[in-house]
Length: 540
Image 1 (cartoon, rainbow, N blue to C red):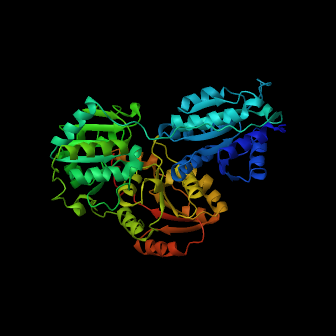
Image 2: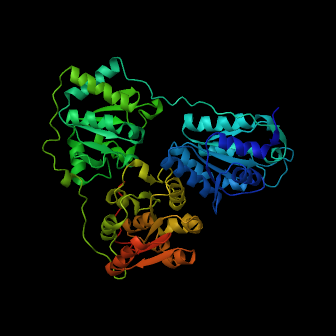
Image 3: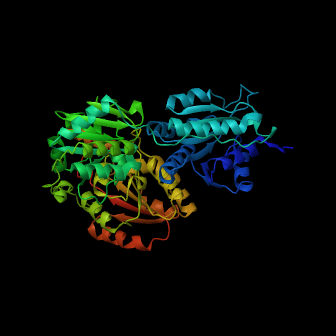
């Protein structure tokens, strides 16, 4: 005979049935009993955020680093509307996560916080799953997890508050997601693609986030072709330490690598969507054959239309292409034989025109690259400072790198840094943010990192301005003063919130802050005082 529980207990148990150990969130009247049961009855961990949207962002980064579905929970009405930017970030980034959102009581349509939550969620691009009845809780939770993984986007499970104290039996339900590798390329299109690759004299291989699990197979193909390797931003570090890795492809390439890409005659793209930043608005793809491989049909042809497209698994396709090249005894291209990789991966420094009382940003980044822990997780917020971080700070691989770039928002980096730190507590997290981004979102959650005891190093690139807007006024020879701000000391804010804070106005203070990194005892903040007229332009 099944024992009947309250619905809030069945929701918590369903999370445990799915192997969930951690949920991020902010409690309210529609979810607090579920959270309590998850912690007390299911031995789960609840990470409380200061803002509802932060909990979603934490779960998104957790998904990326832990490689399993992140879970967050909020209550109803304004709690859900506070999550709209975060849900959009997840939907645009194709990140599977589940948000358990309370809803106002079905019996009270005039409730002060009642809104059409389905329509709110639809506007973000996330999916919506309704908890139908107290008796269908386990299946409804299972559907949310299934859809998150299959549709690769956030799914919001809508939980009416008046269900929580209803009684119902719990029958565990977990749906198989069928995660076997995708199909193998075959047929005339495969023959055409192999023909293009075989005839290339200067082939180059580009890998994106959709090819992260195919690293070894792609490297074998590149070595056989003697083709250099490059990645999109999201796959940064995938080919780390390979002798012919030219790093990031596109507007983030070095000048020498950009020229090499322009000279290539065939680009073989694995799991890359080929958006405008990767292709430099199509300029880098002109006058060359493009072969695109992706297991998701809708990823092909979005940025530009390839000459051959294979809807297939990246690793299996790389192996298939390699097999037929060997069968046909196609000679290697020889493209990599005379490459100077040191020159191809060296980013220019540029002149130092930094004003008194500020530190040179490029010099600071170069020194941070030397001193910061090598096994770090790197997280970046949005802002004009970020492109130099992407090209000058190394990572161990794509799972160690979180770029909050899917919706063009600022102010969401520190929240994702916390999610990354919870997912991999054995690794230090390094997070770069701008002054505007920190004031918008980071200041809400720095103390959360302190309370959690995370090993977090926050670098605030403080040019006392909204930099992207500042440069537009300068370019048009207009007064940029509306974009400039006299912020409080971020280092002092960090200390007042329970961390360590260091202000850097010159090279001597930079070295003092760097010397403190090995002896950090908790979250620390390094505030780089920058000259807004000396921060390099964004490479986009």
